[in-house]
Image (cartoon, rainbow over the protein chains, first blue to last red):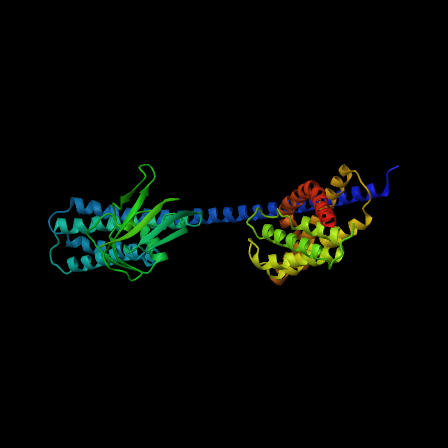
Length: 261
Length: 186
């Protein structure tokens, strides 16, 4: 005969087991729902990206076609290239119209566009445009067009995922500000620096790749601001080889801004 | 053996156990692995249900402010209530305990540890559900969600307390009784 005390403790054990089992089932069910919702959200994003990508590709192809036609005419034309200026003007306004939001979002590209527009206006005022002059603005147009198209495509990637990077700001006076941040894919060092600090910069049209030189970070300008990235293979800091606006950050990358006196 | 609450010995033992319990409770540790339930249950067992209730609620009150997992907030009353129940159960268990061989008491206390931990988690999860309700969730859904999401933590809590109660309770009681005997002889 089993005594009452034993039965009581067996009942308690059963209650504990039943409670944990029910809780586990409910937990599993809720997690399933959560994963389902996450999957639907990802699917919706993928569909949106596919649609945006199609629109972007169409736009890019049309502009490429126009550019190709103008390039063809440029190559087979004789002396005066001023007759092509009208077509170039259309191409430039078409570029601006198709990439308005990208130009608004990235000030360095907007600056490049404005410079190109100014250069075009100056040439347009002249009676004769030489092959070199027209070739130069055509070449600049293509670089800007490519940069804008890439930036737009990178913008679609933002929605897919983020990366983790570490950026420190060394003021050169023993003050170092570390920043560990999650950022969208395709972010440049310039984009990130603008995001985490108040910066001033100068634009250098002739410097390539990248046109930006940072002159002050958080109002500190007691020297020259240079940037470095950490090379995992060689285990050392490498001096930034391009303008910060042309350097796309990688996942788990380590970067540094240093003020050199 | 009974221990009068007002005796200096009792006050000294309770003070030492309170300090020890708070030191462990407020130290960095894995989530839901704790010794407070054991100490509370033991104090209830040794010094009566009232002392168990007071001890449990006091430790959880302090824990509510200084826990390594952060400020407990509105969940603190639920934690105090849950731990007070553990202390009460210690006292009640003493009344119904018989003379046992140690194997049986090990098993009984391990089962009680699991059951009381489950009750404690149910109460504190209800506190979490209140957060959800304040956030606008339907009360039934809030309770189910809080209980379900708390299950992984409850699992750790229950199994760690089965181990702690099962292994430590009996030797701890014996040690406390030995201290009392030494004091009486002295």
